[in-house]
Image 1 (cartoon, one colour):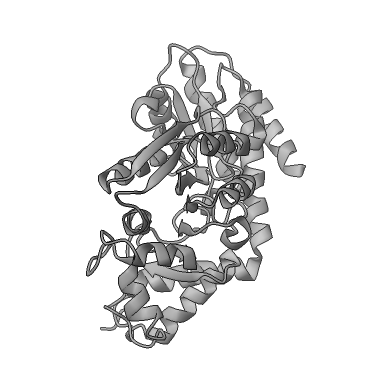
Image 2 (cartoon, rainbow, N blue to C red):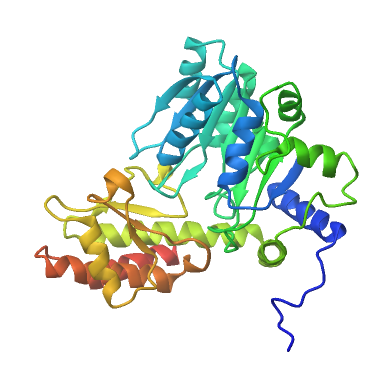
Amino acid sequence: MTHPFLDLPPLTAARFAAVEDRVARLLDTRQDVVIMQGEALLPLEGAIRGTAGPGTTALNVITGPYGQTFGNWLRECGATVIDLPVPFHTAATADGIRAALAGRPEIDFVSLVHAEAATGNTNPVAEIGEVVRAHGALFYLDAVAAVGAEPVLPDAWGVDLCVIGAQKAMGGPAGVSAVSVSERAWTRMAANPHAPRRSYLSLLDWKERWIDAGRKVLPHAPAQLEMLALDACAERIESVGLDTVMARHRGAALATRAGAVALGGGLEPYVYEVADAAPVATTLRVPSGLSATELVARALADDPALPLAAGGGALAKEMIRVNHYGPDATPEAVLGCLTALGAALAERGPAVDVAGARGAAESAYRG
């Protein structure tokens, strides 16, 4: 018997190129877009290993766990790395980046995460991009969590390597990702003797065998189902309108924050300022003496589908994440999370106002 997910005709080079073009439209970029056949860690690592090496001096801005990972990759490549840690309850600033670059004029690479779903903050990339461009450094950006939830504009912001994934705000698959690459970044890769070649990490292979060859013959068999799903979710964003999708995420973030404040029980936003808070996830600090992991487990006991998680690693005890992205950027998901968290807190003693939390969230949605 035939099966709609199995008995598919091969994905043609023309269709693959059309999906790349659709992603380029989403980013409003004229740069080359390479769709990588794996989760976003693939182009994130490939872009660093392709452009960094001995002789590179990198400013690595850390606003969450991914920034820490990027620093490790850069060091493994032989780069000199200047870490710029930013408290997770806030965001990086253009002035902070400017001061760091002024103190080390030899910096020629800057790595930054746009929105950190893990910590709930987002960084002012447009302002930071101006500073990086004026300095002349290559600008590498992880926009995996941001794309679809807030503007991502590599050309306008001077981003040389902009990596996106579809699994968060785009509401798509995790098994495929993309990176836009500027001419400056291609030049840096071509001059880097340590850039991966004949490797799944190699962006240069894609440039030479695919882009420079006119996108006529695919270098290898693509991940067909993931490519079709990426195309479908990008098409959905086009049809609904990117502004509409971003507004849905922004509304979910504002409603979650307002509801959490009204809930009480000692729960409070982890990111202090609204302007620094990511639209994909709201992080909450639990009251002293309680465990975020235990509260989340109790909140999920009655409805395991709620987009709730405890923080990762050292944050597991103190942070709760409400992951209102993609299909969960809805009033139903937000209200469900607030209600479940209120019940979990009430069982452990703190007085909470679930009705007030729901009312505050609904009021935030009304605007």
